[in-house]
Image (tube, rainbow, N blue to C red; front, top):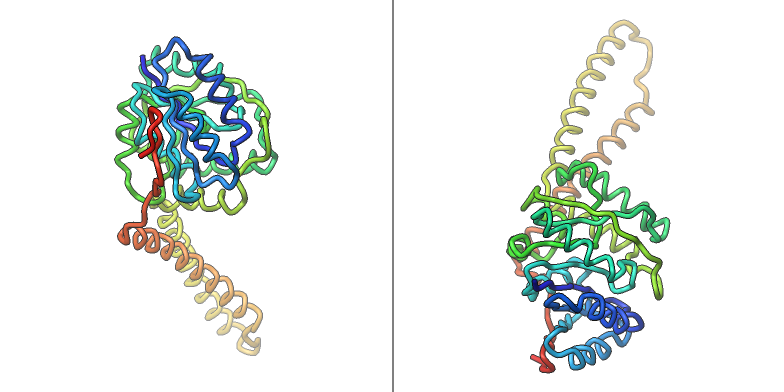
Length: 310
């Protein structure tokens, strides 16, 4: 059985060579394909990955992106060049141990699952990253109709059917888990070990996490628009009730002056709510504009395979 290991590389120059060596050794009884995608890494990952493609001819394929497009865009580039019956996505920092891949693939095959997600007893992410993952998990329950007992880990295995469905998306704002959940509910999960990073720190900054969440909010659900509509109706009802109350109060107590503070609070609250709704609608329209403007999902500078660069 042929399996493809897709690895987005960002600041992975110190780890990727050892990771590939361990993958080849651990999975030697598989027909193995490794796809490295350099996501505009600022270190010398390009030279290291290019050297690996020459060293491991017939096994390793290297895709170099023209700039940093983000992890999910890099994974999409890798999936578009994956030829295995199963594709496994892992990080480049050894937090997903190579020896656990065999367990994930076996679980996918035994259960005939379209996708198998991994989960952990203990995670070695930073507290900020864990908090972001928790928030992402809660929101995905509502926006993506995610099974509540499913953890959306980056370490997962997809069969060829699902890979082909996922790569049909050509827009510039991919969210892999959103694409998976809108394509299938034939989902498995398996417990694996999570390790500490071998080098450096996570590349996920607050800015990148917010951009990822916006992709999930806007690209894969209209639920935020429904929420804004609900709040619009709610405040309209509240405003109508308050107006009736003020008219009756003025009739009963004509000498009491109308409060400037209450008017100011009402204006500020309603103005803020309107700006939030306009911003949300603008986000949807902006994403549509960029898609219609043919903003690329990624730009591939070069592909190296079988010792040749193209």
